[in-house]
Length: 179
Picture 1 (cartoon, rainbow, N blue to C red):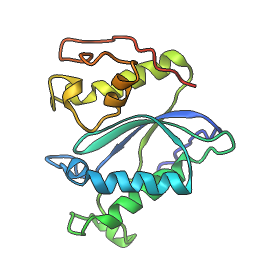
Picture 2: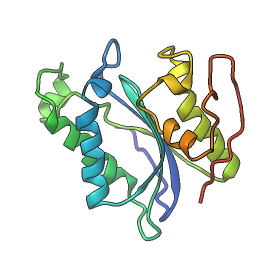
Picture 3: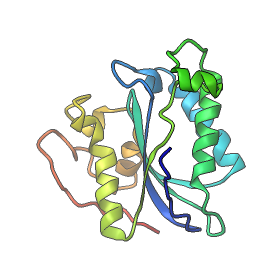
Picture 4: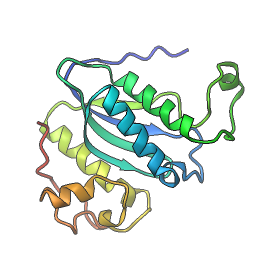
């Protein structure tokens, strides 16, 4: 088994990518968005953290989290979130032999991508990437047309203009703040 090494830094800010196990033609995350939102609320109540940005696509999600100053454990948060969401979904997905042996569901990929954000430029690049992602994947032509994104909150706050992120925009800097 691969030995993954992760940094655990209290109060740090992270970019994450989390995928469903079966991504092809899978729309589970948007079809069951209420259950996913409930899972996020559940975890935030038990293990607080701040969601700085998020986008939910049909088969994966991206987000930026900031952990509390005294806490570094993002892995337990993802474990709780994945399990809470999975329990809300009726069984029926394809389950591999190895997952059967471990008595696991087959909704999520076992691991996730985590990137420690190291400064304002890094934060801004990932912040824009998150909001641009539905256009990148061909889900919409304009960022504003994707409903499952924190983009709309940042338009209301004046961080983005409403028209930001149509299929001709690339690399537009934001004024989002890491703090």
